[in-house]
Length: 79
Length: 237
Image (cartoon, rainbow over all chains, first blue to last red):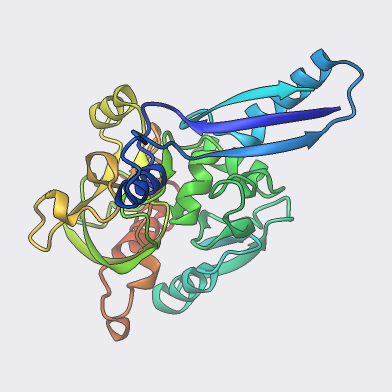
């Protein structure tokens, strides 16, 4: 079963990479882009019997390794 | 008196730390590979700078699960002196021995330059031989040294006097232009509540001989020798 994990910096955490990308887009003329936040995306191939079990497993590995809860939050999607 | 220098795959300041301890300080030093499960009877543990696991995922995120980290955490929790430098600082935040985290520099660049830091607290095993407000000229070399913690955590760090080093100018003044990476409140280094775990982004071990431009960093390691004393008992007050 596949799971997708999206890890992003918490809203309160400054994202200098996202800011640099936003600045680049503005200099390219994309004034309609108001803000950019950069994150990470993981595709997990899981040995799980049900979507709920996959969600639990993906959440556990996100808590333990994929995200640092001090600075990041995450979201899990399961097929 | 013996220092353990932990070596992760990708550590690259391990030899700097070893050289400084052994040949400049004149203490015993031993490399400890991250797959080891004991600290070889060391009195002090150094987590050196570098790029453990290539900085994959997040700096320090994978190294903190190395087998050696369980004995490092146990050593720290028993009150043993632990020094984290640069990547070592990042590993210590990931493993939870120090609060907060290190974000990408506000410049979004890897910065390699000499900076000044002011010693803010003397009652730690890595600053007890310094003088109050002493300014150290030591180098930084990092892309993720921008210290972050939520405001309430920063307030608690200040209240408990856990901010051990702050970026400053040559005169010791805390000005934003002297903050190389955007760290919250100019924090260059801090300690845990018990004060035995100290970490900083700049590299004191790379500035311990006048031949390399500055010997200001030596006081950090000399402090460990002074703190442990001849009987090996930790005293910093």
